[in-house]
Length: 218
Image (cartoon, rainbow, N blue to C red):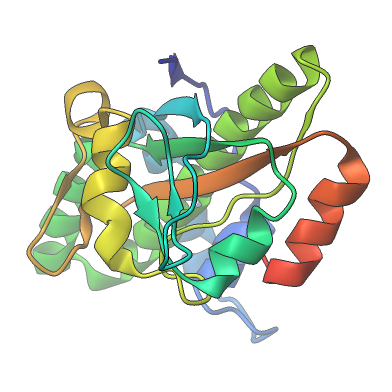
């Protein structure tokens, strides 16, 4: 099972502003400078890593849920079924930027709420970049076999419930390799972490059709 480390050298400012809730309002010189500081701090703190694996499908049961061979992961719901419709196999991934980000956010929550908001947005951008880097690795792996991978589809999208998170994380050994655990309410720790499913298809047109059908966000 591949475990990868990535390097993030920049965070797009427009994405940081988007996750801060920016809607075109004026930004003061002070906030502008603090955004630069937040971006620089995130580049110091983030430790982007991911683990992923590829799995074949088991024969569907009466519930219609998708079961993966060699895993305890069961994917219920019509949304993920549409996302994987026509796929020959699927990829499971987990990505994170690590606990140092969480520690800094906790510190800032007690000392500098403005810096916390900015760093939180930077962390969201950083983990999205980490997941995108993992997605590129998966796409390359699919292409080597003559296949095409479609977009990421995460628990919480559509009707794929968060209750699949424990099995999903176990499937890619996320606690061992990435240090990702779950709270009782199924929130991931570190908080800047992403899990997702991607289908592997015999051609790109089927992959795109499945994306459109499921309304995947990536």
